Length: 182
Image (cartoon, rainbow, N blue to C red):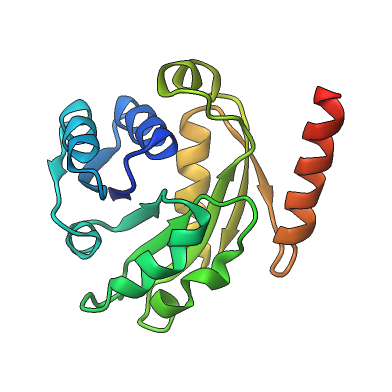
């Protein structure tokens, strides 16, 4: 599968570099900060895209690794792409896949893939993320298989989050994290 990244921050850069190292093709990268997108594209042998829609046009699976408050608007901005045989996911721990409903209405498989792991910086996270747990939501069995394959490629574990349960999942992580720090 061809993978695209929209958002070349810590999460996007870490996942793209890890999966690229496992032999997955990162086809296009877009970020609102051009320098970040160009740097990541160079690191994974990809191209820098001029828009999120350009990434989606060239990829089977697109990861929206943007801030939670930008996910819906980024998804809504991808208006001129037919979603047939394409998938888009986000990496939020708090939001469920319904935030991508504008893409689902155009035929995209949608979901979320949340790494239950702190992303302090890219280099540290690249060393420590393999073996971590990832929460998966998927609107389609094909997408679920793709996400499972990606997680397994870095020795990760999967938790399937049932529809409507993302809030409970996120609350549990918050409580566990806070109690561990305390």
